Amino acid sequence: MPTWPFLPHKIDNELLSSFLVRTSHQYGTTAYSFCSHHFGTKTAIWNRDIDRSAPKSLIQRISDFSALSCKSVEKMTLRKYELTTCLTGSAHSPIQGFAPWINAIGVYHRDRKRFGLQYCPKCLQESPGFLKSWRLSFVTICQSHQLGLLDRCPECRAPVIPHRNHMHTLNCHNCNFRLDRAPGSLLGKTSQMHSLINFQNKLFKALHGLPVNIGRQEIPGRDVLAGAHILLSALRQKRCSKYSQLDDAGVGAIELSDTSERMTVLLFMDSLLEGWPQSFRDLSRQVCLDQKPFSNHSSIPNWIDIEIKRLPIYSRKHRTRIKRSRSPLEELRSLQRRKPPGWRSQRASILMELAGKYGH
Ligand SMILES: [Zn+2]
Ligand SMILES: [Zn+2]
Image 1 (cartoon, rainbow, N blue to C red):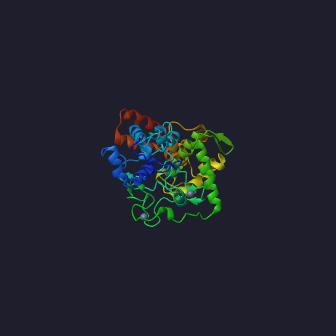
Image 2 (image 1 turned 120 degrees about the vertical axis):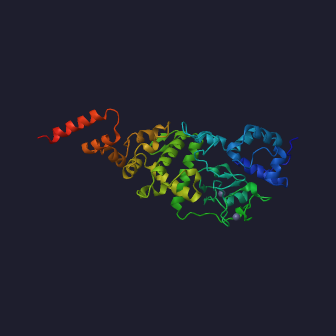
Image 3 (image 1 turned 135 degrees about the horizontal axis):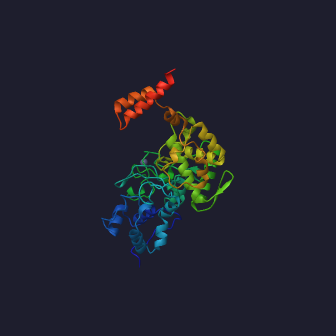
């Protein structure tokens, strides 16, 4: 007989954290008390991103208590997504730091400072669990209800932190507002909604390892996710007020952006990849993009690498600075001042050069 004989009803693709919160509430207690009672006070659960970093030992214990297989428990975490989205050769490890395309929740002790957990109020009405896909950065729309996802309490603007609720899984932990009663976020333009859904589906397909068409080429799913991420990071790095063409690309890591900003970014990426590679060539020319923002990636998928190699090594601005050499007189002054080893012979050859130039 498992220790938790009464489990809440199963919700497909639910996050492990959400499952633990619902189980705790089923036993009439808070997620903190329930977990410290069963796992001991020293087991870190709510002061970490448990959906990304649940250790094997914890998965085993949840499996023992719930009689669910280890595989089913592990399936509730984001590990499989991370292994697919992790960029080969990048500084991101599967557990520490950001995982590409997985929203950061900003763990601060037991609190969450960021808006990385999204939700659809209508889905919550039908099934009171938070889903894995709501943590993905390229997901901003609920397809079943054709609504934009929300990423905070509409009443007090607090991030969604279900484990801080006392009894009601779906209330805002801060002001008790019922999140499942939040008004759905309708997008202004239907065309934008369709573009977001199409792009979201494309990246979902890639996440599940299926090939995706970029422009006229068919690209393996993993390379699509890695390539689009590298491309976006480089453009976000390049963005400055000088180039309004990059305004919609945003700044910083996409995993830190809130849902409304990501919608703009994803629409931008959708149109860039739709016209690939010509759209990228045009944009690079307009914003003087060079190879530099791509240089910290050791492994770049072929479909973007071909285009990156067509870019200048340094942008025009940088090249101008490098090309501007000192005049012989400036060089003489500098030698006189610095006196580097062998400066006398260098001075002699500059003087000879000057004599040859002005001697007649
Ligand atoms: Zn929904
Ligand atoms: Zn609230």
